[in-house]
Length: 171
Image (cartoon, rainbow, N blue to C red; front, side, top):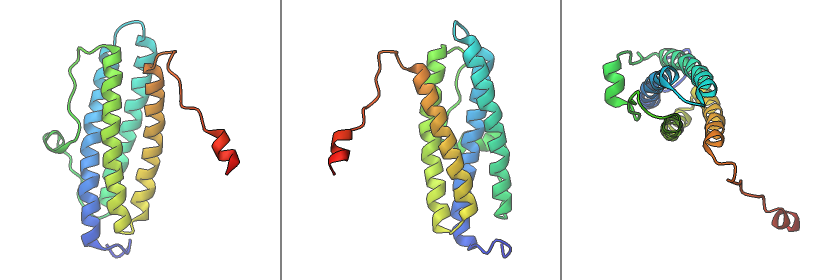
């Protein structure tokens, strides 16, 4: 670990959490492929393309997570049995509606973001800026994707919170 100048004991906690995130991303990736293949209905064209874009992105992140673990001089988990055993996410059936698919993904996003925050916590403690930077970018991208899926799922009568300009301006 000398070439990174990181404390191996502290880094081991980060790697444990990175492996959990790697497992989560594998389950998420497969769920997206499942939904891409099995979405039906009037939203087929929109969601079929969106799910493909999302699983392509997840595939890239899976590779980057494994490579980060290797950079930290540890071995990434690499078996689906391990992923299924430790992942915070669960597999999905193939018979959900388009709305149910989006709802499941939004719930998965919450779990993914929680795991990302845990990785960042331990990476900060280990002074591992490379991992903090990598996962911080993932978090930003997933938050935007969550917003977009939530907007798709929302009713046109839903409204956003208005900023409290009068209170801000008077301070």
